[in-house]
Figure 1 (tube, rainbow, N blue to C red):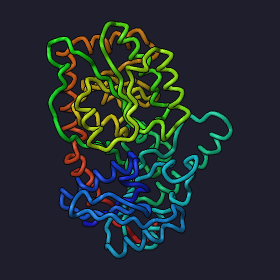
Figure 2 (figure 1 turned 120 degrees about the vertical axis):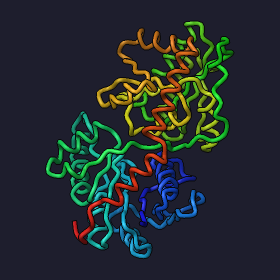
Figure 3 (figure 1 turned 45 degrees about the horizontal axis):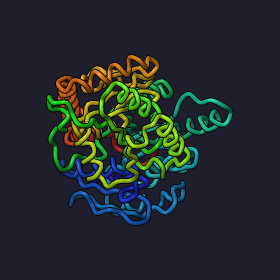
Figure 4 (figure 1 turned 135 degrees about the vertical axis):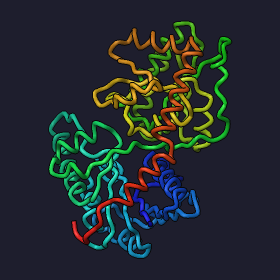
Length: 393
């Protein structure tokens, strides 16, 4: 079987969906599938596996740009095209009706099946007239994608529920498969020295993202301040190209850190190669996932932390995946109850035995639900059982 994975960016371009796509391609190839990654023109990193080819052929991500994808599908005699869809990846304000039409165009032009992975699709909770208009366009994009794709895959429970309620007549098309780690572990897998019974010289808290305000980095800084006031020697490492992706927000964060007196206790990594990110995660003691809507299985950053055996403290928001919060590998907190949040984190940092227990459950959770060999088997089965294409949507 030959599978075409379609995404706008791949390494060396920094992009979480691109990193995820490359790891998925490698894992599928290790299951025996032939994989072709179709992406934008420009430099690309080396193939992650002999059975993975990368074709940087797409010049324009519009309805007209689909012609080159069709050429690759025909030349490679592909069985399935898997579009990795995130609205903001393909258009300004997340509006990309042209790319949303690609599943239909591929099926009209070829006999290839189409599966769309919707890392994001409809959005939710708009406020203001402009956001409502954009939300309406999101709805049309979702309609085009769900109508033409034989299957639609989402990673989080709330997304599955949302799609089934929005398009009940296509509810049987919706599947749920969590994401995998975009940065696989490399180098040392030893536990950090602070997990030893002795009092650690320094504790490391870490966040990992691209500077979206919904990660609530301010609260991570506030927590670091509270932890240090509790007498624990701690630092915070903010992984990711925050300043490059959102310079105004990065300025506010640096100013907030300075106001809190934390300038010497916070490290802003900027863009780092995967190996360097892995080393930081291996040496960390606690991962902070303070997403405003709650922790879900659609966060490659959270899954990457689990892959590095990191205990996670995460927000219990309206979209949170309850099964993650109940796993024992993720410690839920409610940021609205700040004193209890601080007490929970301080207790965990003071008690290396308790932290090690959470770490062990995080490792078990990753191996059971998120390891790439586990996910690849699920994807391979899905691709092999996708309804046969009929040459038209």
